[in-house]
Length: 492
Image 1 (cartoon, one colour):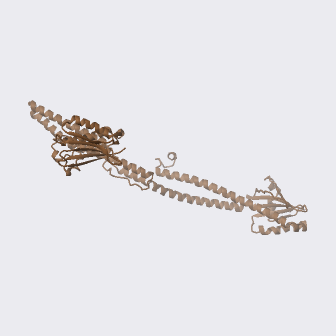
Image 2 (image 1 turned 30 degrees about the horizontal axis):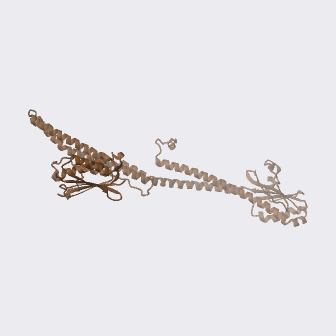
Image 3 (image 1 turned 180 degrees about the vertical axis):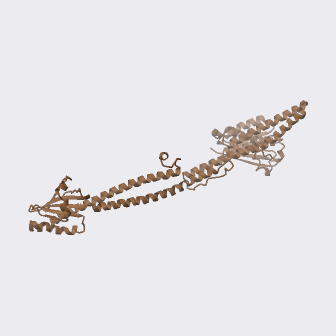
């Protein structure tokens, strides 16, 4: 970021995000305050100066109105007394405004000045360099016009100047020159400038403090995320980041990170479980293989029959180990969503009919019945669903005596669920075992001799397949009457 390119003495590392936000916040606020300050000061200055001009124009109009109102009296007075008479009439207006001064002249050369400074200020040499008309506006009793004000500088002081003249009814002319000292305006503007600077500095300090506090509070969840991430290890994946409860972008980030941590925890747990289960279950066949190898080494070299039996037993154990490892790998892939991308829209009734006819051909020892086969559309992996249904049928075949009945059905369970049911008339499962049969390598006590074959992973695989399809596997059973396995899948 461009902040990092700033050559700040003593800084070697890039700015942290916290400092970047605060720094950008201060720069942006400084720019806004500066612009606001300039705009307010400029408009205030214009208002103040315009008000000074308006004051001069009002005074000029007041003088003209005074001449109009006292025209009869002025005409009755001698020429050398007229200016004195007018100044007396103007005194109430200017007595409380020392910054306005005026000069009256007439055609006879009489002059009246309200302030001594006018003697030095209204000199032709001072006024000629400003190139404006000394008496720009003329008035009589029938004249009304727009008036403008000029400015001049004398002894480092700014003045406003307005010059006009009035023609009396007898032809006599009274010249009027008004001067307003802008010292009060500039004092006010200077005070306003200092006040605005002080307010801006105080405002800037307050904004910086609020910005630092607000940024810390805003980034507090990120700091907690960073601290939590430091504490997460492969042996400590149960840590979760606490949500702020604001339902904002940070909460979305926290939920995403917590979801990621849950997936990592699940993956690590699956890996540990795989290693633990595999090592536990492989210990027996490896022990058997080691025993046969010892037998071959000690007595089987010269005994062909013992040698052949040992080799055959070792081959059977290796095949069982291969099948077990493949099943474990399949469960791990399923739990890690390896097959999610292969999900499509399927009609379960079509799959069930295909499996039903296959079972009738390959297993003549049992009677297969299709109770119902309604159209049931779900989203899933065709191969995995077929494997799950076949696994349930295979279990029914193993535990159902010859001549028993295995029933299949597919129907709509509710407005949101479809169900696939596989039931048999087999030996059933003890109630105490129903909660454990989905666990890996778990076998019912009466079946631990492996007389029916298998490694105890069948139902665990089926349950994992149903789980990744967002479904449920429900098994109910009654001893010596049979077992019913129900697969519940969401409609699509």
